[in-house]
Image (tube, rainbow, N blue to C red; front, side, top):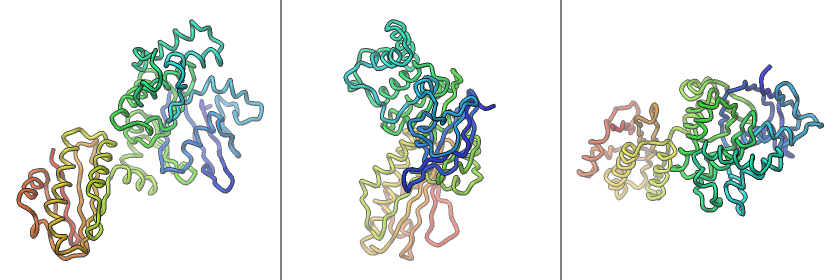
Length: 364
């Protein structure tokens, strides 16, 4: 018997059905990440497991007992199933310590002293004991999420559910929350379900990854299989999209500053090291300013599509620039000497089949 088993779970809101028929099981000590496009029912799924949503049909078995049954004691269930939300849900008028103490007293019936000891223990566990007396408004986003994790852990759940735990954070704060979750996975052997859009989190901490698409589990496998050799075409397309950055200069029209901001955000989301990130930005900037913009005064109908894809564990990237609309090679005919020198020093040009296609591989 599996610790947690989902059988043909369905959830419908009026005419919308985010979960059509979801079935999978989780063993004790497993860390299962749930990924997939927005709107495919990922958060709805774990909210059903915690009974924050009532399934339309199907079963959720926790150690063999159907927690969808009408007589389920929801308070007792939530003692066993912890939940960490993307928006932290901390009480602003309470200190961090009070936010963790009060649920223990209200739900578990612990004394104030025992609840305080447990709260401090969990704050030390997430590296936040120095902030016990602070209010949430005094914390960074990463610190708020760590406080929320400590609050959930203080209830001593048997399984932890994370609903997009890093989505509300700046890229610079994601790593501190990811490190806490990774430590729980490796050192505590805690059973966890993690809904996430952060692929590095899913890859680094999971024993299994579920790809949810169109309300069903499209693929269930190890992180290596899902991210390196997906069997399902929809999984492959999803993984390719999240690992790549695309931008189109359409017939001379683009917002250069928005383009560079988008590229920087992508590099940060992939946790690129600073050297590689700077190289990516420099090459794209010089390609646009020194190769493409000089063409536009004569060929404003030119269309350029950039695609940057990560390779391996962000050790290098491939940048593809595809030109259409004109029959010319701006890299030979229009390149400014300084830009050409910078691009050539950072990249290797690889010939490709197909007219007007050039590929660079950034050398770091």
